[in-house]
Length: 553
Image 1 (tube, rainbow, N blue to C red):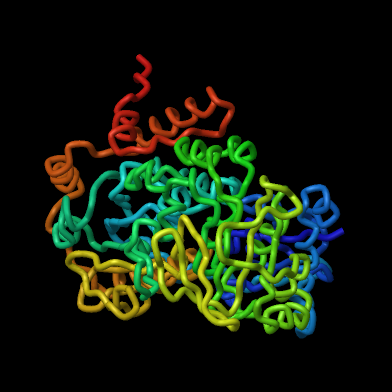
Image 2: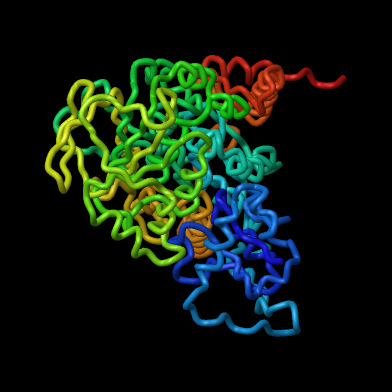
């Protein structure tokens, strides 16, 4: 028996570090690390020790013979296909089981006699927390965690679909650092509004910006400013109870067809949630208002528009495989362009396009509202339409161009899912073309003591785990600057910074407040048989943070 990595793989390579026979690839020191959909177990080399499964922070590694029971049998083939046609890995050295890891290296730590540095990390999502973890585990640095929202988590809390609860578990790994003795936490503080970048820098040796990519890319077509056209990222935030998204942002009661422009993971998440059984979602932490809207939803069809063909799908193989396993949902490939199905049939095993062979092939008649199919009026389906692009957004419809010429689709909602985009940070340089902060190895150009990590550094690419290697590079640069004397000395103390923040922001949430929010949400969930019920507004979050459990006498 061997193990296989499955859908919720976070790519952070914790499993690689514990594997005794080097059977999980790509590793962080290999060129394709961070560029593949996930990590893969080599079935020919796996010795069935289970170390990887024990270490996996998101429970994504299972014994291959248990995959069928979990409805994930396709992942054994995906793992094996990664190694087909590749040169054999070097044989294990140093014994029949354990491979040689090489001499230990501590080059990234500060010298023992080096005075502790004080580092601010702006953003508590994966990128920021990987940077904080690196600093806390390998140095004696004091870390200040700052987030503009009154709750921590970033995209782990607000960007992961509610039907992927295992992926959210990596948040537990990060949460253990919230109460670290060398951590100070200030949530609900907006750098650039409440305090300036220069004020932050004046109280710290270094500042690491992990602010992500909060904007979205535009379609550049007429009509995309109409109320019925919204970013898919906004829908994701809506069903995750983001406090800056109104509960009534989306009305699904009169919408039978939703058109999603794009085929990335966010597009697939949106499509999957929109047609999912609300009763199945009721056991997750989906926002109450979203669950209510989905129960009253008229949506029967979600169309995924792809400018290119199946061979260029932007989603990962795990997300595509999951799409074909939705109970009561038909997966259809529109056969308006013969190139699409030809590419699916020609795809090699392991290619994403090959996963669409289980879909139905149908020439879809688009004008008007969706036609009831064999499943009757309650039928739900997801339709891929390749080699197609939106030409114009109209009230209640979208005009689409394709191989057969322009067609009109009735659509009560059009979602833009063509990518995120970073936004400028006040006081920092910004590259408008890439939507990133210019840097060298994470060091912000012309900004001594300033660093970036995550999507604001490299652009909106890579999943949760990709931020681990990204953070390692930035922290390495920061530590080299510290040893080289390149960090400016702060003029203000940690206590002075705390007084400044509380003077500017009257409702700051600290680690104790965050723990109180956690208790409140879990208590709400327990009352309704759910893991948690999120508080969906800033006042609710702040009020919960202040409702602290009294200290024992």
